[in-house]
Image 1: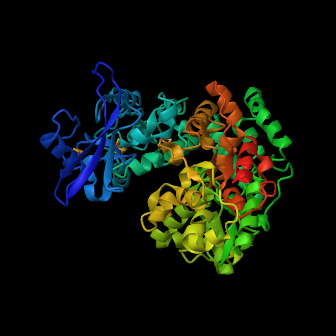
Image 2 (image 1 turned 180 degrees about the vertical axis):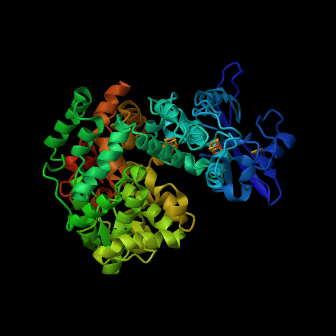
Image 3 (image 1 turned 90 degrees about the horizontal axis):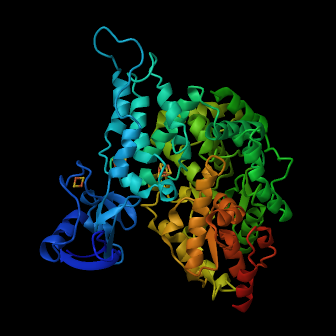
Length: 318
Length: 293
Ligand code: SF4
Ligand code: SF4
Ligand code: FES
């Protein structure tokens, strides 16, 4: 099979470092991966093409890059599936500084993993023998421990694009691996200190739920779902004095009241009625909207048969 | 062609122009819509953060109502579309879960079979209505307009729940429509990224940075407007664009139009009737282009 592969190239050490696109056409086996194609190019055509790889079987996490704009592992992506209009487009992973071609600098990635203290911190009294953890809890955690630290999720995270301080999907998923471990935290397995830390700015509440990390992850870790689970743990642990938790709680309350969402009340409930500066910051938009006849009606219309929704909300409220 | 219509909260709250534009367009195309007056909010993924089961039950309730009508569901909001598709996906994959959910619906004499078609107007136009039927009805081709797509996360990810692999045309539906209606496509990478709305009240600075990033990028590419199938993206990209621009320290002035407004213009419906005056960022220059076309 003949494939054309378009690579975004860059050399930080060049005299004038500038990225540019270069196209190569190469012959590969029908079952070749994108990584095979890249290696073929490096062997046959341009020995300076730089990329990272080791296991070639989606285990080591070295070969993450953007393939057709989407983060993932080159060694797990069949070349034949990646051809769009005759070409495979490859770029280095996003949200990390590029060192050369497809090789990025992972220092920031590891710093964030370190920030979540990635080891067990039991706080209760020490047991006489070993710590006991149920099979189910370990099975549940195996979904997160499947992470191979490849950085595909970080590459595509939409918040990291605008805010490099965000802990990001990989570190937050790693944090969940500990908060959800029954051996971590107090006697009941509640990791209150961790949850408090993770609730700070740049933590769990800053995720936009865009799901880019879910799509990018080659190991089914589903980082966003872990972040949502962290939020649930935080709210369950009573850590509700923040905009994110108030937002989620207000949502349930508003839908439970009228069956549909009242956008006018949501900001008030989210930032809290006493947070005057934050509330005021919504005012300009409110006034502009009003002038254009855009502000939601003050008397939010209730849906038909709203008592049925209220009953369900009441029955299932946690 | 008939659908059980699920307009969503925002199209009747913050973006009423979307609701009327969608109705006008469907009317003109002969797409019959029957609303479900008892349907609740989908939960928008936020309610699900606190209580996923409750969110799924509320959506199953809507699905059951549509099954009573006997038609597939049509949405006009990327977020509604995605949240509903995810709920359906979970129930579809797990019979016990579906049964549990149905047990909560029994009081209202409702029952969800486990599968139902849920389609955004964007997909309906391409997959059900068909361009071959739509294009002959175009009286005002959008010639000379330069338009950029902006999808909204929930209609793009996750692909399994949205059945994108079985329907690959969904990946480029907006681009297809923009070009089919005669406009010039101004493509950009940000089209499938996040508008920042979900963190508007949680981290306003990041939310504004996202608005500025996308709107400024298409501005610099020479786009006349951005088209979105998602009213939540519209609220943020349009309503908060002045704030985002001042945070970014530059002028942007990028009109954001709803998908049905773009279709409506091409079908010859007056911009005024499509509610374009209701936007925060003026669409005046865009409307001039329509007259010239
Ligand atoms: S869901 Fe959250 S963590 Fe994942 S990519 Fe989006 S913003 Fe980042
Ligand atoms: S969560 Fe998935 S994408 Fe992110 S680093 Fe781990 S394996 Fe890679
Ligand atoms: S080379 Fe090891 S994961 Fe791709």
